[in-house]
Amino acid sequence: MAPLPFGPKLPLLSSALAAFLCVLWGANTVAVKFSLSGFGPLTAAAVRFAVSTLILWGWALVSGQPLRPAPGALRPLLINSLLFTLQLTLIYVGFTMTHASRGALLTNLQPFFLLFLAHFFLAGDRITPLKLTGLVLGFSGAACVFLDAPGLAGNFLAGDLLLLASTLVWACSAVYTKHLLKRISSVQIVFYQLLFAVPLFAVGAPVWDAPMVSGVTLEIAAAIVFQGALATAFAFVAWTRLMAAHGAVALHSFVFLIPVSGVLLAGALLDEPISAMILLALALIVAGIVTVQIGQHREMAALLHARSR
Image 1 (cartoon, rainbow, N blue to C red):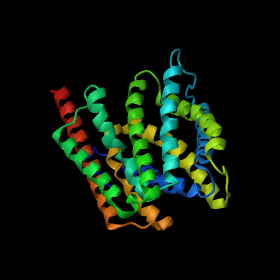
Image 2 (tube, one colour):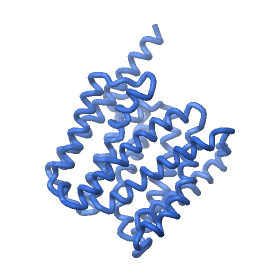
Image 3 (spheres, helix red, strand yellow):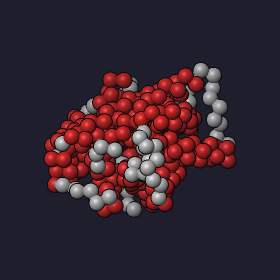
Image 4 (cartoon, rainbow, N blue to C red):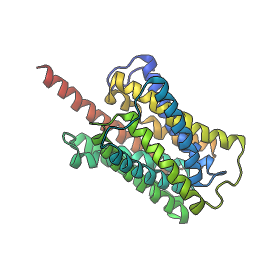
């Protein structure tokens, strides 16, 4: 896969892996929706993240990654996990009410929420005119989702609003995580947010889910394994290594593939109706993501140029 024109150049294999991971995350929305045909939402989350936690623990053990938190780190890790648990609860409950294609669009508004919050809470992150254009495009896409006819009826609207709320919580969590990364490794942050979340999901499942398990087929079990092993554990390890090698700006050039693959796979695998309004929303959100990435790339290039003088 050739490097994208608005991002730093990557080797072919790294580009292919970054693109593959973004497609995995897009497919994850389809897997989440499908798994809910056999599991209650909190039950599905508990099983998925239990699988992810075990895999990440094994990987940290084999690779020598320290998991013991430094003194004073446990409290912020717990706060981060509570935000994560709230976010995923909203996502899984929301997906019981709306389509995976709509969820793939609404959850990918996170970069726009994050950009807005970062302007106020992260030093050096400012909304430039180009980024503002991206924000307008992205939220115009969100408006198209809500204007789509099914989204105005009953559970669809409730599910869409829950997913939108989860995306806002996700952006808040991302801002908090950026502060944590100054003193806590990304491996510990992800491991403990999963470790603390699993018992919370497990406790909530008997209260919320009715029933917890309605029927498990081989396909539903595969969807859970896909979410836990591939879309969470493997994707985190692979993305972290790519980040260390190439930096965030280069990798984020591929994130537009997440909503594209999510919407297309929802239509192909779940036979969801993909209306003209949903396609317009997809085009606007992708255009917004690309515009924001161009803005971030230009800022990085200007910073590097200034440092080299």
